[in-house]
Image (cartoon, rainbow, N blue to C red):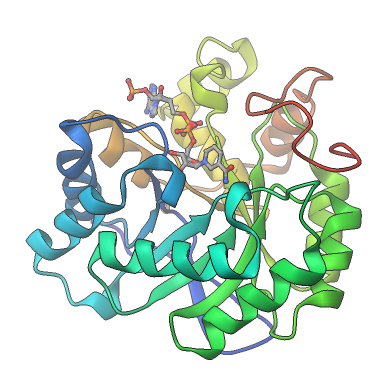
Length: 279
Ligand SMILES: NC(=O)c1ccc[n+]([C@@H]2O[C@H](COP(=O)([O-])OP(=O)(O)OC[C@H]3O[C@@H](n4cnc5c(N)ncnc54)[C@H](OP(=O)(O)O)[C@@H]3O)[C@@H](O)[C@H]2O)c1
């Protein structure tokens, strides 16, 4: 098993393991098994959400692994329906109960809600941290204007923004804004939910290097100091996706992959949920 690097927070001590395991696409019976396979492969960063319904399975797999709680970086999220202060606090309590843990390593607002003011949500997020229910806090699916507002309105420092990012989606502007605020960018759907497979450029690079397309795509993100949280239901792919710490893409390969961005590259796009749109 290869040791994995972490991405440091700049505003406070702590770090996020650069490669995590996503559980958003898990269903029913395979859930705890998939997380168990990820922990066995070496993942120490697990991504769940109240909305996914996977918190119980994640908690079960963590306990069954026998790994010390402090070795795991656990992220969960509060859904956009629950961003008023009272609902927010209840959602955090429900997450802790479902996971059967005392604290969450990274608590995120899952999506902004056009009908609930950030001036109410951000203090509720900060309160969860001040109460010790979350060690670190952040946001997901915020555009640049909302990110700027969230940072200004949050009484505690944010450490991360989670958003879709992969070779088909240009996130250069959002990435620059995230860096300006000194947050960690966590890429979700890093494999574009499977759409990258069969891409001639990625196939070519993967073949020449004797690597899989998934490994090349994940490596491309990691080399930008972006964390990634791929999902697979298959133990061999879960392990393959984690085996990305012993090779480096060249500048030419990086540029070829960067040129794959396309106008319609987004795969996760619930209509109208981001006030002001994505850009
Ligand atoms: N914050 C948010 O709003 C948000 C939104 C979406 C996702 N997320 C998080 O991001 C995580 C990842 O996103 P995602 O699950 O939607 O998409 P993804 O990780 O981009 O892609 C997963 C798909 O790729 C396939 N796959 C994985 N590894 C493979 C490999 N080595 N070779 C071939 N196929 C492979 C999987 O199929 P098999 O199962 O058949 O391998 C699955 O269909 C989610 O699970 C969730 O935790 C967050």
